[in-house]
Image (tube, rainbow, N blue to C red):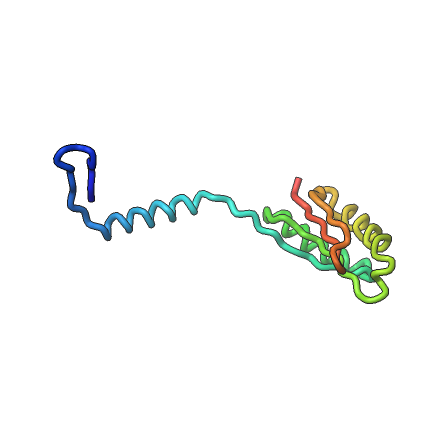
Length: 124
């Protein structure tokens, strides 16, 4: 390995290349250990969902938020539900927000994307 290329004569050093690769890999592993990865968990809901089914899914969502993940709630529409997607979606989102309002807040809400509406929740 060349240590001082600008000096005369240039200074070189004999090194163990395997050791250098090992130390670089070790440094990379150590830096990855300290980084924080945000996980996103998704709960899918249909407009005709019953009250108890919605509570069950939101309890799972509550558990995800308590674990430190972000929660993505997706409302899926099929067939004729698309004609009233805006009203039905807003109604369900209101119910979901009311259930989760004590531990989370909605981060961003998308408009109708094809057949879906998505909302991201983050823990308070």
